Amino acid sequence: MNLDTLKQIVKVAKDEGVAELKVDTKDFKVEVRFSTGHVVSTQVNHHVAPQTTQAPVAAPIAIPVGASIKVDPTLHVVKSPFVGTFYAAPGPGKSVYTKLGDKVKAGQALCVLEAMKIMNEIDADVDGEIVEICVENESLVEFDQPLFKIKRA
Image (cartoon, rainbow, N blue to C red; front, side, top):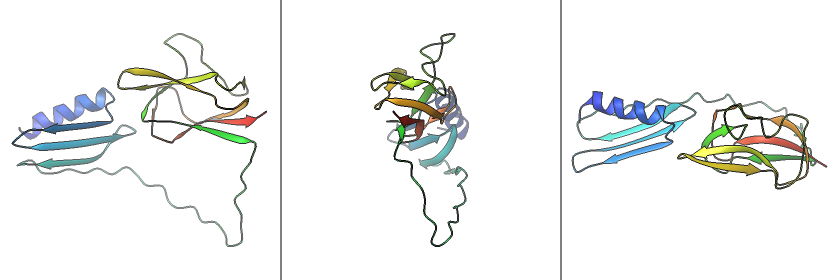
């Protein structure tokens, strides 16, 4: 396999929203993982040179000594159960499941996450009010990434 063919395979996988791609033959092995649309790591065994692109890393936040981080016990965070694409509505041209300020009940659908062409509804697990929608429509989300913040009723 030449480098141009490898680049085409990676481009198609990335364009289709594939989270991970593995190609393993007797002559070579390729593993590619994607994160928020960027290639995070590429490992190639054979005659093709490995390439690595790292996502930017956020700088650490300095917290003064003696300071405390306040956690609101009435705030519940709904997190992504897997890697996928976030959709705020059940389909194109349809109204969104929920908006900022909406009151929700446990079991009520909040959004859809698409993974491997399968649509999965994500439900509220507490009663309350949506105080923050943490991701934009059609964005790629990671496992355990906050999706919604709900102020408990």
